Every structure is written in structure tokens, then in C-alpha cells.
Image (cartoon, rainbow, N blue to C red; front, side):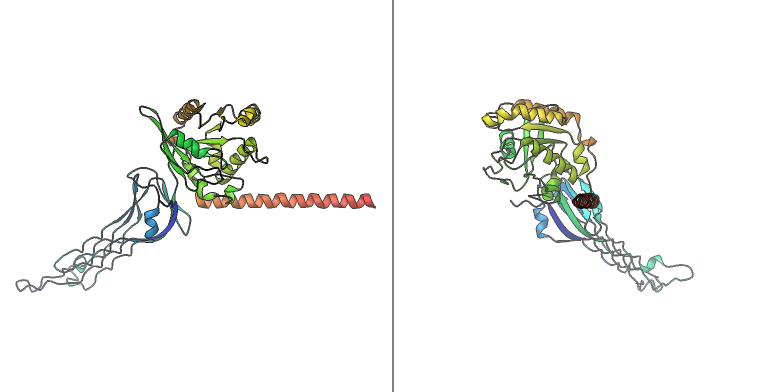
Length: 382
């Protein structure tokens, strides 16, 4: 199944029906008076979060959503029927933004949650409502008001308790496959995982949590490098982040430097991610090179404030139970209610703008320093 986590659609609520201008003409009521009924209200566009959906694929085939219009009023005091609401189901974890302004309109983070995203127009009043002692035969009625129309951008952010973050090929997919029934693609080349995968970890009766395997994050991901921003936003929904690092065959890679890059990229993408509870684990301890590097990794991470590092092997399951229990304990200490509000796209653009301005200032400072050095060199030559 194709994984779609962002889409733009046009939503239009129904217009209200017009009021009617009519008069009674029965033989026994020659002066029956005005009898034009009201128009019906237009239908609303309603988004309904449902846990049976895991992707926005269904909406990929519906670029326009339109609710039913209200009927016009009729004679004999008959009101027009109200338009039927258009209810669209979306996955739990969908955020709805105004595509033009970037404003967050709704955050559907609970099952069976409903929100009216476009309100239908009101029906106009018929001429029966304008009769007065001074105007017993009014020939005017109101038109219905138009329904709301919006261009919407829907973003799906997976609702998971734990987010697996790490460089490609550190064993994220193997980990989630070993602790749950998820079956992600596993191979010995980078960027094997192209879509997020969810798995449920069970530790016994009523003891379980959901893990999300986020595709590999590399340096520059916050600016779009690698799989970049497209999947970084899924991390915002996770209560706890599990950083996986390991010794890579590439001599230019270092597990501690990888950890530094991960922390920096998450903080640059969203300041709230820098404050998220973190567990650091070293994978692939069934490899001798990883075991030899463990003391150095623990020492350098301790200098960075990481109190404990959890070594484990998905192949032999050594250290796996201790890691899962540590995750469970941290989840209990950090309930979902304590999570900060997600950063909106407008706020994220402002952060990137400020970061770019700060970078320009730093570059200007370097240029001034270089000019000063050049002047000093020139004086020395003289």
C-alpha cells in the first residue's frame, strides 16, 4: 500500500437555499397572505478521525470535497431541506492547515474525533417572515449565504509512544521486527526504509506501547537532506525518542558524532524535540567491533549528559529486555498529556528564517576577521 502523509484538497460547504416569495391562492382564502418558506442550510464538511486508516491515500483520489447545498424554500409555508453533511474519514494523527495562511485549523489526535472544517451557508428567509401590519403582502425574500470554501493541507503525524531515530543501517527495522509483529523491509544498504512503520510491543497483560520506525535521519535532514523534513514531522508525536547508534563500517562515521548530529537535526527541526525524553541504545552488540567500542561510547556520551547507554543485539536479544523495561518506565513518567504543542509550519518557517539570518551574520563576521588578518599580513610585508 502506498504511504501518503501529506495532501492538499479543496473543501467547499454547501450554500444555503434561497427563501421563497409565494402567496396562498386557495378558493376559500382569497387573501391568504404570504406563504414563502425559508431555504435550507447548506451541509458542512466534517473530518472524522478513525483508527482503521493509516494513510491519506483515500483522499489522494478526491482533490475536491463538496457538501450538499440547501434546498430553496417553497410555497405553502414549506421550508427547503437542509443539505447533507459531507463526512470524510482521516487517520488519527491528522493535522489540518489552511493551505494559504498556514494556520492550524484542527488536530485530530483521538479516535472518533470530529471537527467541522467548513461550515455550510445559512438558508434565506421566505416572504412569510417579512409580513407586517403595514406590509401584508411583501414581495421580498432573502438569498441563502454561501458556504465556506478553503484550500486545506492535511499532514499525517503518526501517533506512536516511541520514535526510533538514527542513521541509516543502524538496525531500526531489525529492532522493530524483533520486538513486534511489524515486518519492515530489511537490507544491508542505506535508506532501506522509505516509509514509517508502526509496531506494538507487548510486555505482558495490559503492558504495551507503540513504536514507530522513522526512516533514516542524516546530517542536514532539517533542511531537506536525505528523506528530510517529510518524515521528521512524524517524530513530533512521539513521547519518547530512542536514539539508535552503532559502529559503522564506514571509517568516516562515528557513533558519538552520529548522536550529536541526530540531536542537532531534531532541535533545528523543532525546538520542542530537543526537550523530549531520550533513551540512547547501542545496537549490534553481537559484532566484536561494537563491543570493543562500548567503553569509549559510554564515556563520551556521559560527558554529553547521557547517564546510561543500553547496549543490545536484535539477533541474539541480549540486553533487549532491559531496554524495553527502560522504555516502559520512561513512558509512565511522561504521559501524553504532558507533551508540548507541535510547531506549526508558519513557526517552523520563522525559525528557519532566523537561523538563516544568524548564519549570514556569522559569515559576515568571518569575512571581517579575514579582512583584518589580510591587513595585518600586508603591514608585516611592508
